Image (tube, rainbow, N blue to C red; front, side, top):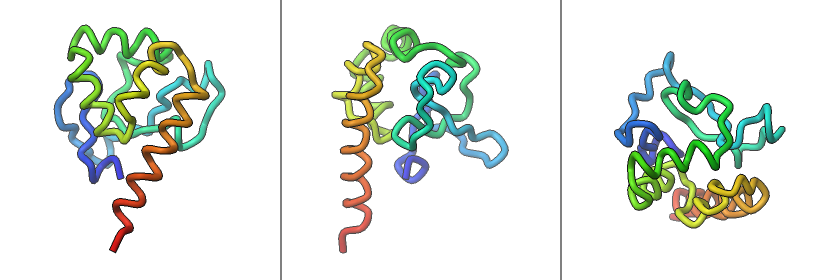
Length: 115
């Protein structure tokens, strides 16, 4: 669904080049820190070298400086992450982030499966 939606690259804010050998399955909240491997905590990206094991509060705060809050919200929405989730990312609040992400993914599935 994220590829179909054209998920923008977190770092550059540009359309990613989803080449089979360069695509990465990324944990939004790093698995080594938060121990969460659910699809609700994952997205597709082209590189996570700058992200690595950074907490979301640090990583996304830096991205606001690069893209502005509005720009980052648009990037998040392309990953099926609602703009309302940004406050949870900035506070390392995995539980509430996953609740909103679940809602976003369910809405997207419903849109894609409506006849």
